[in-house]
Length: 434
Ligand code: URA
Image (cartoon, rainbow, N blue to C red; front, side, top):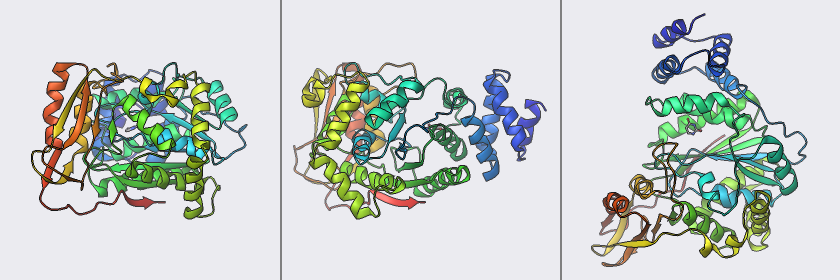
């Protein structure tokens, strides 16, 4: 078998046996297939796709390209949540401690922000001292002792994905439903989970701009879970506007602390509860949604979720003082307000424009090597459907670099549109795939 033969076959619409997929991924991981040939293969897969059997084999081979966690020593049910990425999406940060406080083990392996979408790790690392690079032994120890852990993917887990993702990123082959599904599911299945809840974002600020594509992605990932024997539930949720009112790394930690203190914005709390319900149900911790919701709400009113969060921060080396005094988290020096040019209703608060603006301010990275500025961000005073008066503040941008602000400013201006009548309500949860 040669790589050229396999590329030719996929290019012409053919299929691979499981043995061929094993050879392809293991040989690439062993550095015996050069990146230029793998890039060509990825483009062939992007254009021709993988059938369900090929996709299951591709995912399994990626998962076994490195270490697979063994969490068998943890008695609790182990349930994780993964988002396909959005703007202002800090859901994992309050969700993990709420679910863990209900007795589910949450072994959360998160990513960094790339492009206009933020990353949980960058946000968590704005807490001074907090480490997200944990080796598998430490990961397991914190999970066992505390009940949750929030870490980055270690070098040893799914190394094939790290290399393939880097190639996809520079060869226009990221937005393939098959490749995204295999990439996400191989990493999640390597966590030795009893169940997984996916938040598949739909809208301008998401990978998937339209419901049909998002549903296909959700169905594909749920199908991979099924073929692997791991129950997966996916919610399709709105990402036409940012989630919550804060965009930016320290900003989003502050807003997550608000949720844990019972003061979170309605839309963010709703998504946290909806995903949390599915996690409790998958973990057999609640018999129905109503019970699950009330258990999750109790973790806020009793303070048990906040205690869980503080314990996790301490276990990962972070300074818990900032949780009690979020003003100590990084901020930026300068502020600019976008004001409403007329009275009316907000008919657009566009996630892509605002996410891209935050990226330009330094909240995200255009390439993996970029540093982020933890203190910059955008606070949304008005969101879709809100009634505003002329001159009222719609959004506040906080920044450090004036030139960066000048490139971001027109994007923030373009993100907002005002109209004379209240726009139709948009559901936050668009659908569920089981
Ligand atoms: N997130 C991933 O982990 N992989 C992809 O391919 C896309 C989003």
